Length: 128
Ligand code: HEM
Image 1 (cartoon, rainbow, N blue to C red):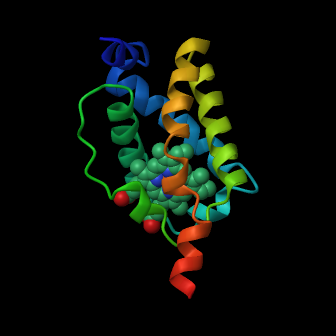
Image 2 (cartoon, helix red, strand yellow; image 1 turned 120 degrees about the vertical axis):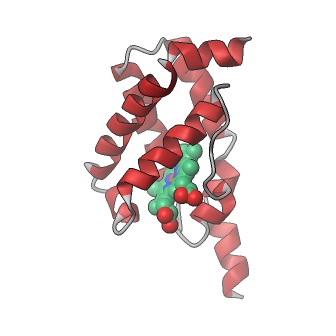
Image 3 (cartoon, rainbow, N blue to C red; image 1 turned 90 degrees about the vertical axis):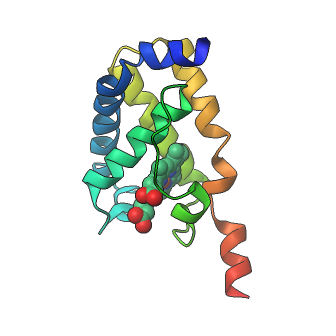
């Protein structure tokens, strides 16, 4: 199955966790993105993102965090924040020698979540 093949190629749980560690190092070093994570418990964040990503690439589904709509509600994530995060994830995947074809697959899956994360409409509705 190509989904679980992708999970194997990312290096299963240990490989995905290492990619996510690298990813949040980049996020916290990014002048535009780091402010969103002020006050967020990064160990929990890393654990949730690792479980989420594993499930998104066809590995076991152990994610027990909130749904992505609820998790990002009120955070005022912009389209450009989303693109920045996706780019840093791509860099972390490449840093871990993930093949370009697999990087593209992961980015397509993550890209399909955009409307759950970028919050402009939801915020407008809540304010009025
Ligand atoms: C690119 C796709 C993204 C995915 C797959 C994703 C995934 C997640 C997951 C799984 C959580 C944990 C939810 C929980 O703990 O219940 C989370 C939380 C969070 N995400 Fe994202 N996220 C994405 C994009 C973004 C972007 C673009 C930003 C802003 C720059 C962002 C900011 C946050 C913050 C600040 C939290 C912590 C919220 C809190 O603990 O209150 N995320 N995200």
